[in-house]
Length: 401
Image (cartoon, rainbow, N blue to C red; front, side, top):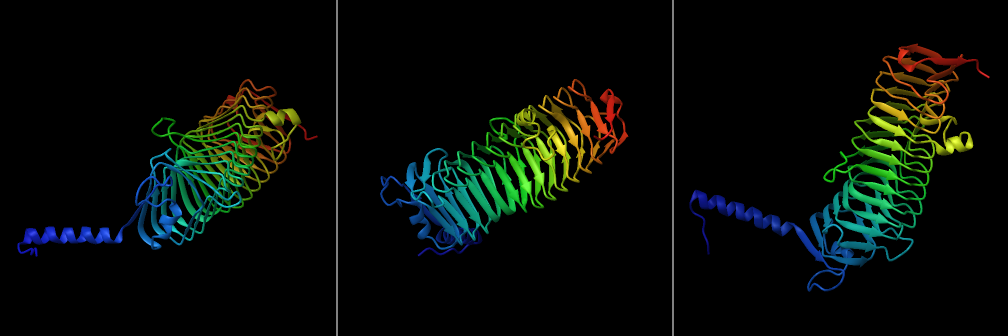
């Protein structure tokens, strides 16, 4: 029997006792879905079923392919991790969710690729982190979040039959290195919640979020949602609008990013919504607008930005709306635009600024609008223009038809 008599030995013994206690209460398991590792579980679900709901619990998955559906219900403090690129979970029931996280807190899934099934569902859960993996070829939504707090990073969602990410309520964050591409409907959508696009700086160590080549909108926030976008977020080549906020929603876009090559308008602010925008390049949008005379925009005349339906927006500087296939910036239908100056609206097919139908534009500082096909600034007599228009190179105002 060992007895700790002196004070230093007592402290050492106490630390050892604490460590041994933590090991007793930490539950760990190893999974090898190939069955090649003696003593390891052969499915992740079997390892989950061996744990109590209250953690900490952790599962290490060895390189293998797992054919199963993960059901994580009521867990608190759970980690499932693998070396990125070495583990794939394939949904073995085509109509089932390949992973379902419900009523859980503090769940971290890292390094796992998911494939097939009907994507990933997260319901009524918080502090859910998923990274360094992918969700591909879902037969439904790629990832659905309902009234949850979710953060994904270094994660790819692509080739879903429906949208890439669909969230309702709660908070959903894309925390750098997230790619959402080639999904048949929306790239990312939020209803009645908070959507955060926290992009990187474009380097290999801190990559941008990329939302591209989706069938409908790239990013949509509607029904009293808030969309905060900062850092590197590249919204490119989507089939409809690049970014939409609608139905009393708010957009805060700052600190970089590009919105390019989307078939409809680059940014749409509609339905009594609000936007603060700075430091973004909006170019090459609106090809379908030019081809069809207004398809895929609310009002039907914008290529770069539209602020319509009694909405308001603020350009805080360093907004570059160039080479779009229709008007650079449209303000219409009793909407308000405030420009603080330092923006560039050049070489758009149509007007630089088009202001009409009871809209108001206040130029607090000088912007540049050159090389646009029609006019630097075009308006009708129902509108109000205030402030510094000298840098625009002239205006063309006309009677309402």
